[in-house]
Length: 428
Image (cartoon, rainbow, N blue to C red):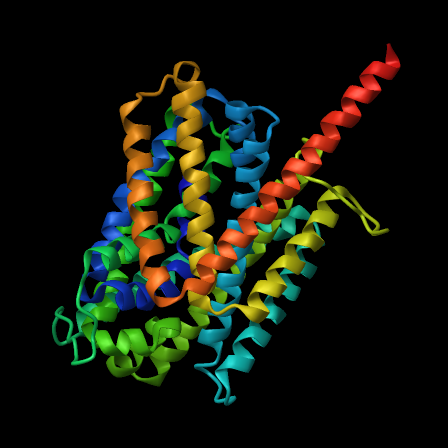
């Protein structure tokens, strides 16, 4: 039950609050089906993580899985950093979602100025909380997670019941569904489910992890499908497709206004604020620990810049700084685009590692990881095609970041190996 609560709490975050409008913009009235398609793809992906966790139950997470598959090599370091940055990007996504919903309570004028300012403020608050004891972090994140899940369910049920119909109006300027648009929306939908990977970090704490870890992952995904369907119907029943796209950064609050008035808007905004704040607090803690682990594995360079405290406190600072830059200078759609590109590439590396190096040791069926890779390639291709025609700059940024990471890691590991060889020769 604890693992299910963890996975569901992490998954239900900015995905459902901000992705609905972006997915509708890509694929029109088919956006609820894109959520379902994303759930199916994530279910295939979960297989490799379950098998790895069953064999290597620990708190090591993605970095440890990659190390088991590829050793302390460039592929491990590169793909682990892709996962790290996809998680930092998710924090920025949460931060800007917080800003977008908060502005529904206040008329402050220019949203383009105040959304990043509010997001930056939330990240700084999360930084201060993460400097405190681990117990406080866990308590705050758990309480906010419970409120978030309960509130989302209430919103979905009430929104469906008070709607005049479950159908959705379109409007003359609404986009027509296309195959590439549907694949691109499905890729975005995966962001709303990828939080299941946090459950794998509980492998060393669960009773009978070989039986319960996989069960917890699948139950969490199934619960999120039901909750996302409820919310999707609630939004679609109270807004036209054009209105969903127009209010894409705060569509749940916009859907509450015609249905239940300003009081419901207030409830939805407060819910979004609590959800995003709790998600950031928990995510910052987990991501800074992941970077510290990669540093201890000597897979990434580290400079303490004369900062006091432990290694994890240093990586906490780096994580917050990266998040602040993204929150200040990138909008929600571009942040989401970078996150899904990095995540899907890393996900394919996990499946390939199972197929190529670990299939026998983890007892995996070759067919399921193969299907997972094909599905990842399919949706990533569709997403890249959509962005190439609508926002090519985000693809240039993604390619540039990956090139810097790849070259930087190659140089760092080559220097580290050279130093190790030199030390070994000197000792003899």
